[in-house]
Length: 417
View: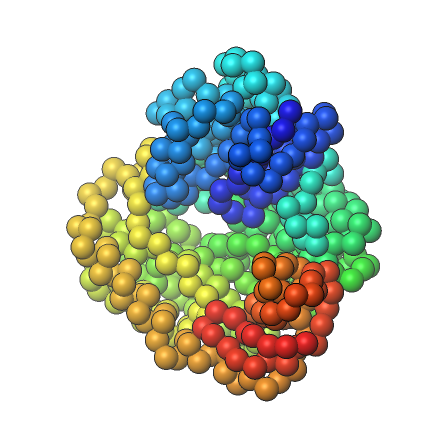
């Protein structure tokens, strides 16, 4: 059968899709690049935000072809939203061929239970042949009041370091240029198996080969616990100097109500210590505007922390009450207040200070590792993961080039070979 897999959400979901594609190909199915060419569609879903889920459910009702709904929505669905559809949870990837067969024959099948099946070193088809996405654990140790992903991914289950190393070695032998170590929260890795994220990162970085490692999202709750170990590992030349540290708020009151296990000072300490030891590190963050208990003073504290720490990358989200989460039971703030706060944070981020943050690189020559081409745009990364765009009909994917920077934007560098 011709199967199309559509992936929503994070890099962990993309890794799951690559694994499902591998199992399907192993069983003789053909993977196609468009829904129109498919005989059956697999949706690998995300449950982080209301708009994403609502849009997907609306599209699902219009779908005329056989469908498998996989990923976080079926795993976390407690409202029967997917009744009548074949469902495959986040821990049942190895059963994707059974799910496809059931959907083709219009049979009911729901597989969302626990499984002892190995998650790593299984068949896979990479979405980008130059990038290996390696899940390092399932679930997390947190209990954030706004998060529905915990219902889908469960409690922390760290994968064995030896299995992670083996998957990376295999990928490097196949010519991969980048390795993404990913999970719901990389910072919690190993706390259930007597190791930690810093130790894992050092082990992977020690593998021989020409590749770079992108270490995924790391919540400050656990980053503060393993700060010295992580900074030591980040200094390895094979590790991109890029930290994704989602702080969500800069107010101790809001962080406490969110059940985050950190304070604004913890966040400040993490950022300043990383910058002290690795001055040119790129640190990205996430902010939720309009959490139900957020006062005007709380929001001012968030703005002040953002202005102080000058994160070069900020993902801004309005608060959405996800069903069956503690925050969904709270009284929401008026919509206009939430919108105003989101606009205020966006305006701050789009200010002149941020827009000129890379101007000092104009005229310099930097090294960029290229892994992607879109149209005439070759997209590479610097050692601290800044995007570098070079326009050319030639495809530079899989190569490392010296680039002279001609211009910059708030988000990227642009130049010529």
